[in-house]
Picture 1 (cartoon, helix red, strand yellow):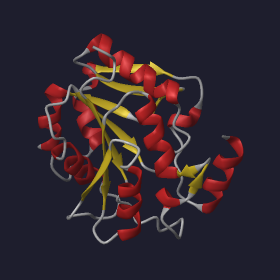
Picture 2: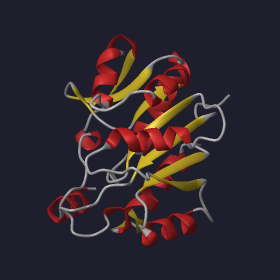
Picture 3: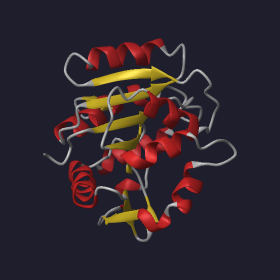
Length: 204
């Protein structure tokens, strides 16, 4: 068994991109888009089921995902109950859309194109070695993304309800977390504004 067998990736892409002023996931990044690059990094680590959670009526993004599916194992699911700043329901929709019983689910931000192949590799390797642990990358004692939920906790996460948050879930299972220490802050940064985008492009 390889380190990626049975692992699904959930990319959170239902946000409104209000501060950016345009659809972040469709912005150019390297030789593709922000979303296209994230999908390529996940695929290069052997992940064969990638689900992008988007909000309804985002036709441009859904069409882009369909185009990407010609090359990558990616599909989308609609968060029909989307509310701004509601990460929990997007994760729920993604987890429920997994077609087979996964060994784990990797939770990925859709606006984190500086995602590093080696970081994903180390997260998956840690899962392969520990099996039952939540795996989270950490830089300077700060948790980042993406993070991984093992199979036996997926159902429990799906039943987590507002006002509880993913942070509350992680706090409850703190003793089951295995941290992967990384040597840069790429796991902490995401893109919210045009300045964020330009700065990351220059430094990546």
